[in-house]
Image (cartoon, helix red, strand yellow):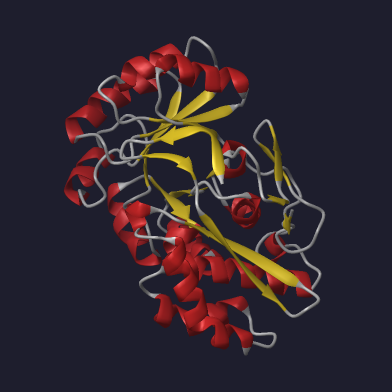
Length: 327
């Protein structure tokens, strides 16, 4: 899936996003899940295909099994490939809801009120291009990717073209001292929080920051699976859940529950998925404090219809399940 513009973060640049769509069907109802290729997490299309094939016979034997039960049946065989596990889990949740003529979110939320707003992400680029991206896409909340020698200057310059709320994501690129120093300046520039300032395994540094940063810190690379949530509670103010990293909707629901018990803020984010993946992700919105669901908005051409956005507001499809339909 070619992107509208090259998408750069602190460690690499993406111009075309490879993705795999998994479908589960009984001939009448079909559910969809998605997993993207991502070198940082050793995810490739070939690996996803091999993993899906390895558990296909188990999935084909289910007959009304609850999604939680299916997840626990196939997880042992996919423990080294949670991206594929997520795609299957999401596809089955979607199928299960469609087969019962229910929206996916109705299984955990009865709220009919407007949910939280999604941010729109601005990747690292020249100042002028970053400004252009903002002006091309007026939005109430932007997530700004950082991790350069000029991060504070970037935010100051972007402030000249918008009054929108900013969130910043350093993608592991800062040191403890940089974070403390940057947080003070960023707070004055109407920044809401800092996502993953330090390397994922720098737990000592993050624990030090938690009581010293003037802005909240949100774990991303440090929070991949359910087992990471309790450790993150010691070192961060919140967590960012990615369905592909944690293994799908089933464990994400457990991560949200545990995070709430520990007093953490909860965010869910995307990995440049199409509307297939984002239609699944946004079903969790009623349970969240923040969401980053802009994947399809970064693509030149989407491969599905389903959830959409109006200036950050989530507009759900009227179809059951996730509502996603392949084009």
